[in-house]
Image (tube, rainbow, N blue to C red; front, side):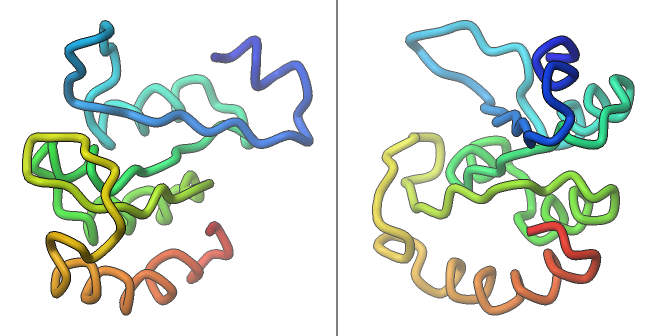
Length: 118
């Protein structure tokens, strides 16, 4: 990751974490672990792509995850979708958890743009 991000400091590189996937080996499974690795590497152009379904699978509070990434200016991208609990269905946002996604989306602008991240 360090070598890729260091290759072009002007280009942002975003990591996407995921709790589990039956088709591959997952090494980074939470926002906290992803943030710790990125902070350890220490490059400004290395950040996080939060996929809503992956955060939900990990049992994370979406608001807390976004606030944490924003606090360290590491929220680079959002994959806004919906899913059924432990499945990565990539459904249309709000098709399963309408009120939860609406609540998250209504606060997202405030959470993510306090420091100009997302």
